[in-house]
Amino acid sequence: MSEPRVLLVLAGSTGGIGRHVRSVVDGLVAAGIPVAVAGPERGDLDFGFSRAGAVFHAVEIGGAPSAGDVATVRALTTAITSWRPTVIHAHGLRAAAVAVAARTAARARGRTSPAGRTSPAGRPRPGLVATWHNVPVVAGARRALQHGLEAVAARGADLTLGASADLVDRARRSGARHARLGAVAAPPLPPATRDPAEVRAELGAAERPLLLAVGRLAVQKDYPTMLAAARHWAAAEPAPVLAIAGDGPLADALAAQVAREGLDVRLLGARRDVADLLAAADAVVLSSTWEARALVAQEALRAGVPLVATAVGGVPALVGDAALLVPPGDPAALAAAVRRVLTEPELAAELAAAGRLRSAAWPDETTVQQELIKLYREWRDGAPPPIP
Image (cartoon, rainbow, N blue to C red; front, side, top):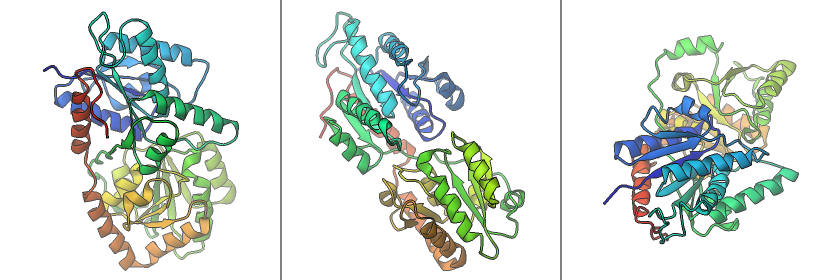
C-alpha cells in the first residue's frame, strides 16, 4: 500500500507554529512519507522545511485577511494541484481558511473531486485537517471578521484539532463537524551553553533575582500588566531584574514605556539562547490574556524553573499545580505571586520539582508525530478515517 502524500500549510510564524510544523516534517521524512510545506518564504528560511527534506511551495499567507488573499488562494491552489496531496493539514486559523478556499478552487480545476470519488486524473479529493493553535485577541470591528474566519475554517475542514480544550469548544461553536484535542509538543531546547553567572552578570542581575519572560511582543501577551507588576516589585530589596526575550509589533511602545517609567526591565529582542536564559532565571513570568499550550510554560516546567502565569485558556490544564496561577490583568496579584517565589525557597523548590514531574507526562515530539502519521495513513485510500 502506498504512503499518503501530505501538504502542510502555515501562515507567517516566528515561533511555536513554525517549530511544530518543522517537527511534523521531521517525523514524516523519517517515516518515508512524501511531504510538502506551503507557506511564506521567510518560514522556510527560519525553520528549514526544505533543508529537512520537504518540498517547499512559497505561498505568502499573511497574519490577517487582505486584498492580496486572492493571489494567496491562487498560489495555494497551484501547490495543491501540483503536489496532489492525500491530506492537507493547515496550522492556524488563517492557514485553515486559505486552505478551505484553495481546496475548493483545486476541485473546480478538475484535479480533485468529492471524498470517495476519483477525479479524471484518478486522484481522490484530499482530506483537510486544521489545527487551531491559538485565537488572536481582537476587539471592535475586527471581532466580527475574526468570527467569520473561524466559521470558514471550522465548517470547511473535515477534522479540526484544538491545542487546548477551550479551542475545541470554540471550533464546535463555530460549526466544526468533527473537533477534538490535538497534542502539540514543545520541541526540547538545546542544552545551555553558558554559565548562569555569566548570563546574570550580563543582564545586571549578578546579586539580584532574575525574572524571565519569553514571547512575542503582541497584545495577547499583555506585557503592560507585567510592567505594572514590575512597579510593585521594584520596592523589594534587592529588587529583581525582569528580562523579556522576544520581538513583535509592540516592541517600540514597550521600550518607550520602560524608559518613561524608569523600569528595571531588559528588552532583549528575539533570542536563540533561551536555554541559557532559563538556566540563569529564578522564575519565569507569563501575563497573557489567553494561551493554549504556551511554549515558555512548557520550557520552564521542563527546566525546573518556577513559573508564575495567568490562569487563562489551556494554561491551568497544562501546568496543574506545578505553577502559581493568578487572574489575568491583575498586576498586584502577579507581583505578589512573584514575591512568594523569590522569598519562599521551599515553595520555589516544590514548584521546580512539580514542574519536572508534570512535564514528564506530556506527549513528546515522537508521540505527536506518530499520532499524525497514523491519521494521515488512514486517509490515503481517499475516504476520511473514522472520526469519533
